[in-house]
Length: 129
Length: 361
Image 1 (cartoon, rainbow over the protein chains, first blue to last red):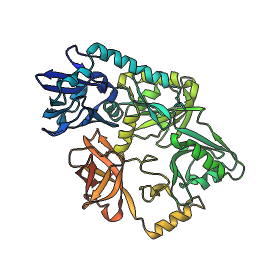
Image 2 (cartoon, rainbow over the protein chains, first blue to last red):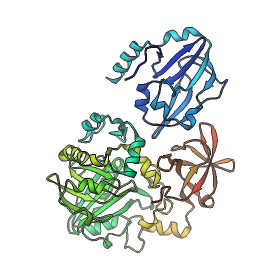
Image 3 (cartoon, one colour):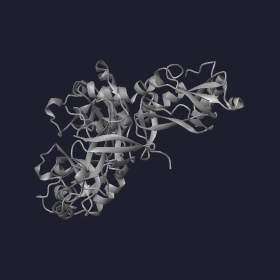
Image 4 (cartoon, each protein chain N blue to C red):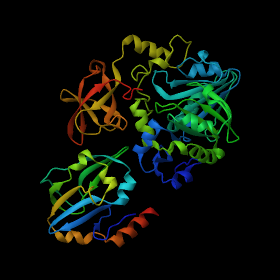
């Protein structure tokens, strides 16, 4: 399972990468494996505001619809529109071209509740048992 | 209560199968890529474990009259070794279940039923027992594999002396696969050429592995429930609990071809004659999304600003590169091209009624 060193992780299997007060959010390699082929991505609108633990996006696999939850409160500054035509990027490059949205953070301290790569690795192992 | 497991459960997990609860059975939904599994079946060959399906046998000299009474299709037309798609109906003419029935001999009827309906079907048939017959639930005895796709025959022929080319569509052959006595039926739920194979439960793991080996030259893939569903959806085959149930009739579900009203009394006949005379009020139709979105089961279907029905099945049609679905519509809205809107996460997205099956061979 691929868990890059430079990212933060949520219990709902999202990854976050922070630049200034904006975070990029996607789903982890583990999450895309569990989901299977992503065939549709329903993205939010720019400037939409989401509170922590709110669903901001729906990812649809062949069989099911899964919500993606933001672990932090913020306003959408960008969405990855290329996923509309190429949803498979979520599977192929979950940490790269498969990113989903960027959010402007309201409270930077919310990042403290996220997991380090080591913690996330342990978390996924514990979840599996 | 724990989930039931087929004899292939460990193999599925070893193959990377993502296991889900499917009507009480722990089954693989996919083995990594439902899309690749779907394409494997359309283009080469795929192997499904469908051991969760039930098998009921009616044995004895009155097996045929007994089966005639509880099913709506006509068995009299069948020869030994022939199969038939049919249904068990309530007196109201609605579905207990849809089934595949095999006439093994005139004193031996073999019925394959949906996993979720197995107990109900068995009870139903037993309740209507008549004459000299024995009714057996043999679901634990049999494992069932579905080998589907254009290369399925070449794959299976490597493992059996039975001349598969002699088994025609909806016929059954007996013989050995890997030295194990098997029932080999040229049937399926994918729209592709293929076989459904009934074997003793204990023999399933070996036969599964042998089939995967034999199919290696054709890039065979094990395939899960997600692909099984998209394959049947492309063919617009009904699925019990979705398109058909205790509230729907064969007339409405476009299954009038399995109802033989000229046959002597069968359960549901009177009600079906009556509803046919009265005129069918709604019909199952296929639709295709025009706007970007995937219609899923239970999503509301709107026409001219109000909700008319809901989606019974919907999803991607991978081979067609479209998103499609099925729904019941009042008869006046069933014409091809009828504009619809599907409510997806609060938004009304455009769709239209199209011909079925979606996938035409």
